[in-house]
Amino acid sequence: MNLEGEASTVGWARWGAGTNAKTLPDTASTLLAQVLDLAPPPPVVPLAEVAVADCALDGAVLGALRRALGPDNVLTTRVARARHGSGMSTPDLLRHRQGRVPAAPQAVLRPGDHAEVLSILDICSRFGVAVVPFGGGTSVVGGLTPSATRHVAVDLGRLNGLVAVDPLSRTATLQAGLRAPRAAELLAEHGFTMGHVPQSYEYATIGGFAATRSSGQASAGYGRFDDMVTALTIATPRGTIRTGRAPASAAGPDLRHLFLGSEGTLGVITDVTVRIRPLPARSHYEGWRFASFADGLHAVRSLAQDGPRPTVLRLSDEAETMIGATGSGRSDGGCQLIAGYEGADVRPTVEAAAAVLAAHGGVPLGEESGRQWARHRFDAPYLRDALLDAGAFAETVETAAYWSALPEVHDRVRQAILGALPDAALVLAHVSHVYETGASLYFTVICSPGSDPIERWRRAKAAASDAIAAAGATISHHHGVGTDHRAWYAAEIGDVAVDLLRAVKQQLDPAGILNPGILVP
Image (tube, rainbow, N blue to C red; front, side):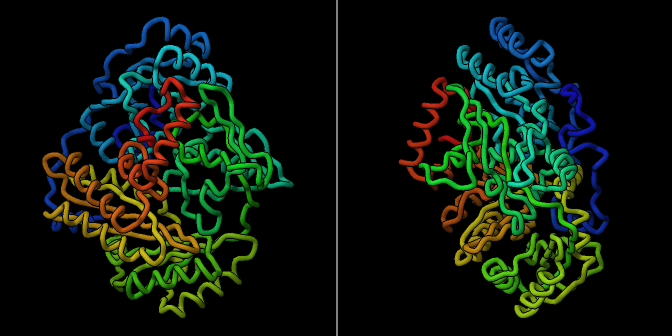
């Protein structure tokens, strides 16, 4: 992997490579111009011109790291450091476009195995240098911007192999730096899949999925990523921890869940063992229309609780359905539901689920609606780039709540965002992860940038987060905590739990080098 450029995989100041760029439909551009106050954005500062201060690590630190990893795996160039200085939130991208990387690491380290990760943690503990694990760099909650005055990024890209497959138990052990598409290819060679396909699929890594408790678009059928994990190997400043040696255990608390979602604050995950399933022989996607979001929620809840449950189950509210139909010629109104099915023989499940959807007032839209969603399932971040290029601002908020609270959470969060952006904003929402007891809500906000778009969004995001907390929902369903959600996370879990997390971190990370300022208040 070429960390100096990486133009073929990850772009600069945008979500992905330029070859994957999307353009806004003319009808969407016209609608935005009518609704929002747009102005042409300033030109993007090229990566080569981004201002990054010289590496401030002294010779003793760099010498120790180079002896441990080899000189070629300790990078101090400005380009490499700029690329590892933040995630992919809209504020991150706007700073990149301005040529700013406020939290660039002092060096980028590329360990080749678990032992080298342990060496990094030992050296950095001794010299008081903070460590930020780096996978695909797709955090959208400030998970890669620590509070430390100097830190290094530990890029796990060289830990990119399939370690083992157990076809009888249907498990696979994957190294943490393995990107999701390559993991899918390697597992497919053995006839298996994880079924984990989040929005960040093209760039995110196995270790990142575990560290943030990721949830994929097919979670209704395959489960969340933390549901799939059977074992972990973690490097900590105190040594190695291995969790999970059986399919289930009553031998004390399940320590896997101490590290799943820990966001690099308790250790560096180096490999993950996951449950796998046979590659599906069949897939079928279709669309449905409901008269209202409330009607659609009743149908989704029925499938989630009583079955049959599709592999993918996604319901857009009226606003998201309307924007999604822009330029398509559809003007039916209401709300669109997408149902996807994967397996050896999906037809019985398709027919049984269709009967449930129809009984709740659903009108079938046919397979083309479903296929269109599947073709464009990764487009949203690229369309955000196009919106920024057009002079708009676009960002997301997500949460989850019990079914009884979900309608109120939807309304309160939407109104909070609109109240914080009174001049004009489009607030779209959908349900895309369902459980017997509740579901997620994912909001997309498109608005005018104003004179200070980053500060403007900070206020709007705070209003949305306050509304989430007041409605009794969680501050994050799958994006994680990072720095953006830290205060609300502390309020959500309470003082005693915060003290517990701090005590665990103190035991595992006595020098406090692991991603300081992230997650743990």
